[in-house]
Image (cartoon, rainbow, N blue to C red):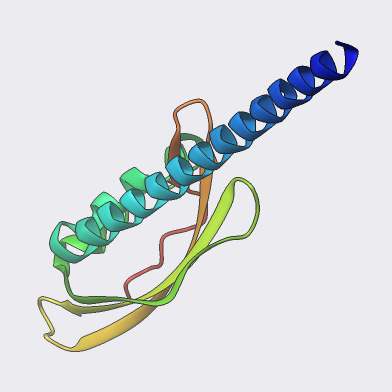
Length: 138
C-alpha cells in the first residue's frame, strides 16, 4: 500500500513538473513569436511607411526624450535587408541588424545606413520595444 501511494505521488509530481515545463516553453514561444511580429512590423513601417514612424517602436521613456528628425520628410527608403538575424542576448533583450537603403528626394543619391537594433521585452504589456537610438539618415 505504501509503495502504491509513493508511486502515485511520484507520478503526479512528475506530471506537474512536465506541465510546468510545457507552460514555460509556451511562454518562451509566445515571447519569440511576439518578437518576430514586432520585427516584421518595424521592417514594414520603415520600408513602406514614413521613416519617422520607426520612433513609435521606442520604449515610452526613450521616445519621450527622442525628437523625430525633421529631415525625414525628404527621405524615401528603397531597401531593407536583415543582415544579422534576431538573437536573444538575455531573457528580455534581443538584437537584430539591418541595412537600410534610402535616397533624399531632393538629391536622388542612394545611400545606406546600418541599423543595429536592441529590443527589450516588457512583461507587463507583453510587447517588445526598441531601446537604442534609431539611425540617422545623412
